[in-house]
Length: 365
Ligand code: AGP
Image (cartoon, rainbow, N blue to C red):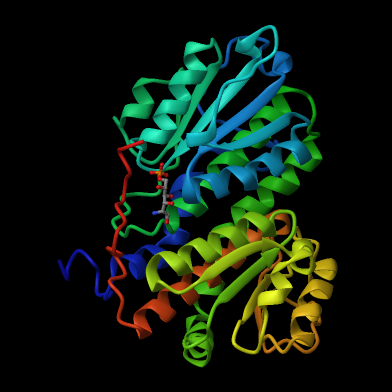
């Protein structure tokens, strides 16, 4: 067991630190930055992408948040309508030609019963289906028209970490493929996205090297009443994911909000005992989110902000920096949230790899 953990005390921490190599594997030989092209080995029929009317994501938990991130990428770079539905709530609604709706099941394990149920409903109604999974030979790969592997390597910890990063990276490649296939993304713009993607493993490594800072923040705030995570745009699913991770393994109360929503209710919960963690980077409308964070600080909440390196930020209790990688900065910010959740849980001696009441893959509806 100790050998399998490679010297780490928990699989989760090992898997957090494996993210640069997992991402390299995810991206390996799939992108040609100079040409602004990607190769995902997907055989969409001739003319399919041009005729595509909508992409519908179905997923649960962390995979749902990765899908929310991607829906925004698709709308920005591929000019296609994209919706995201929690798998257990999903009913297929397509236009007159259901085949022109691509339903994408995002599932690390490939065995989540809610997600399999949703994809079966979509396939039954005549939609085209695609699985995005980490698991070769999993059920979802047998029940969909195509499969895209995220190649993150095995993930043992119940809390999904490296697979979230690899899901978003894989789906970003898919976004570029669809954008190019539909003629919606220029070579120059594709190159920019792919350059940022190529820089991701290095950017994540730089954040991992800051773990001491995160541990110090975790020590300072471990006894808080609750933790709030806020973000906008690409920062919003990351806020939700940050809160899920923390509650899952520390058993503390943690909530994620769209930063603009704080003033519509959650501010009533804010006090000096509720740190607010905010995504303030590029791709997350940092200035507006900063204003929302100030509203919380006025109510004496400690403020932990993840910012783009080199951008001056005033009066945060903790400023955690991510390298400039455009729309992927919130994804890199998430690595701080993973480490924060890990250290809070570890200081409390929680059962980090196997939290109470949870299973790695949920095979009942
Ligand atoms: C994440 O930390 C959770 N353990 C959980 O939300 C998980 O993401 C969800 O159950 C979906 O699993 P899947 O990706 O294997 O379908």
